[in-house]
Length: 274
Image (tube, rainbow, N blue to C red; front, side, top):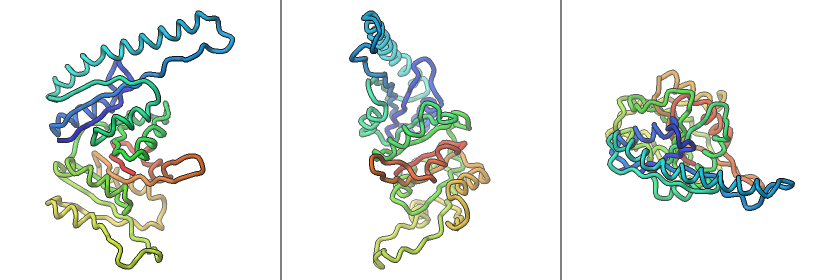
């Protein structure tokens, strides 16, 4: 059984990510939890504002929590109507990435909207979720977010994230009619020990009776991110599976350019891990 967590930033309508997560749970016989995160209550009134403003801000925040809490009954009924036996709705307050990080500890997969033009900072939210160690499904709200597993495209670069993403996608790969794996040609690292352990994704998949077609990408030819998206589109993939490499800076951690390009431009849901 797979436990799926969907981030719901709207309590009036179900976003593409919530709908995708629900269909995924119904298809896989999994559990579904939706999480809505409300802004924290204001601790002090805005500078220069009359005292009545603070009371209004508190009343607004309390009303948001009340409405969000009551949405739970409607959500559970809707999920059960799709055939999901175990569904739950939770409301948190505070930072969205922190709330997802906590709730993600009891989930196998976190499903989040990737909004057109990165409005609402969704790429940053997904990046924080990935770098916190969670497997994330980014669902574009301007693309084809129907739940289909006929054609799954795996972009494999040998990174730990790519291995984790491949492993996490097994319940979907087992249902796919066509699995294409794009493997970047190995780059020799002379610092690597000659007897270091290696992971062959093709052997791993075939050992699990998954038929896979293989393409090799020359790392010297253009952008790896765009090449992956081009191959995914060319093969009419329903889902993209890939790793997400992280970079550490002085004060922050962020995804590299390849992962960000995939997040920004993929027209189909992308299952990613860092």
